[in-house]
Length: 67
Image (cartoon, rainbow, N blue to C red):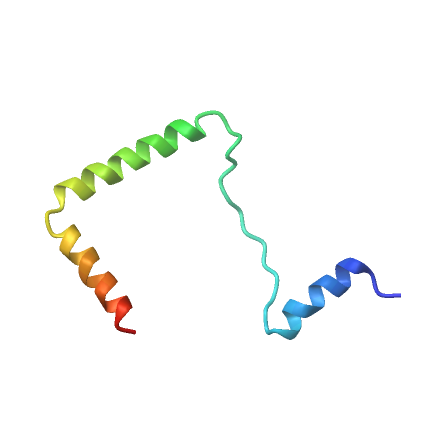
């Protein structure tokens, strides 16, 4: 008898995929929200200071639309 778990893993394998293990930040850690906020503010400040960013993003979007 084939287990449900094994059966569920076979379809992706047949499709050419393989499982991997990755480590991600623990969102439950103290300070996680504050660090996200800090990094977001830094990114927003950098974006605001970059006068060419808007046209770059528009060009990138237009390029995607043409493919």
